[in-house]
Image (cartoon, rainbow, N blue to C red; front, side):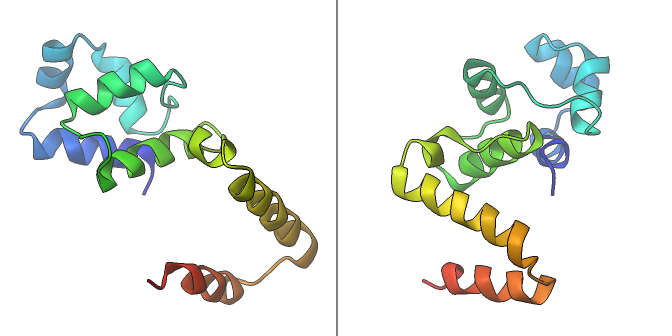
Length: 120
């Protein structure tokens, strides 16, 4: 799933057409459509993302909130600031990047790797 898919699903779950949503919250319909279609990246301004999340009824601290932010940062080609702020996590990310470049793991390797960390 990408950021545009996520916000489009949220908007439609709230019962808004694209035009109604844009009129209600003051967005340009053409630009919002481009965001939803992945033709325009999400804002990199945290205050704007906070506003969008509120408009889409995404509550801070929820799983949807984290997904919303993670997708936004991924689409901008950035690592979320909460990951970078933690030295242990940011070091792990750098080691993972090195692994990807040097070892070129297969899809199966990645599925196994992620599976190790997704077990609770």
